[in-house]
Length: 146
Image (cartoon, rainbow, N blue to C red; front, side, top):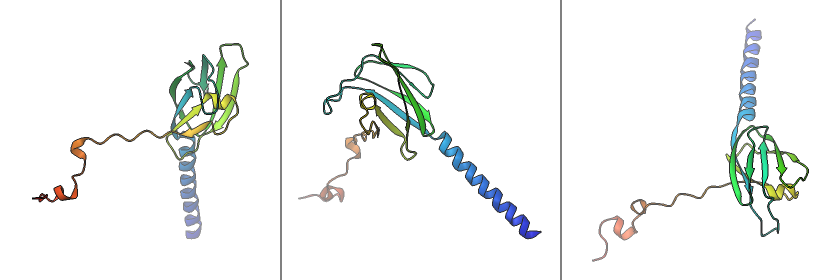
């Protein structure tokens, strides 16, 4: 009887941990920046204007040079790009890794099939204020040069 109880409790603990992992993976939030800028290095020109929808959410219009953000949940996503010039609608599925919080997706790279079209986006560190800067070692001890 005691062995059976330990086994049942162990299974319940395992199921709770598994449920926590599944919920984390399914509902992990990311910020996805959609970038519709020309890429001179690759010689790609951004389409103008386009309507972008991510995961059947709100549709946003992008002109050449625009960048805006979507908040997405989970790791598997679908993007739909509608062109104003009558070109066929572009749809693609993509995956965001769980590791980072913010990604940038290049529309010109994606529609031309250039990898990687999704990259990690790092924000610039805030500049330090003058009062937060460290003093040189000779001034830090209060002695300085005489």
